[in-house]
Image (spheres, rainbow, N blue to C red):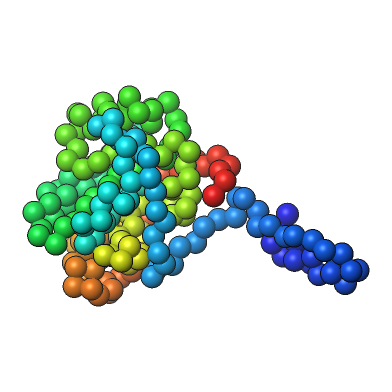
Length: 208
């Protein structure tokens, strides 16, 4: 039942003198906007067998959250670029963190498979499992890979693709890097959104 229908029913019931409570549908899509507070998350297990949370990164000026996975060819293609990004910003004194989160539920996306992938590629950033898909759903993530840049106030300043080309050797604009550089100056980037390219995240119904 849509929100519109619920409101019509509520109005009718009030007209008839009945008292009702209208709740939003559990599966209504989340549409975060630039400037929104980033949804927090906690207790996501990583390939290091440690539990991770957004609060752990309180000393970082900027946090980049990437929803990705093992099996999507687009995600695989972007792994080297993500490693390069991490290395470029790892030594910045202001503190920049890249966090990879896997919300896919296929057998190829199990934690043991994530560990194999992280070891094979020597990921220098945390790779976390969102087994309930609640974190991905709270961000409104639809694709792998899809990036969210959070400033020091944990407000979203960029949503979308890492850069402007699927092929690494043809990249001209690195949107996430530009967003991070702007956020470190307490500014908004010139480009705040750019459509992500990748595989769709196959959601099950989740309570948000």
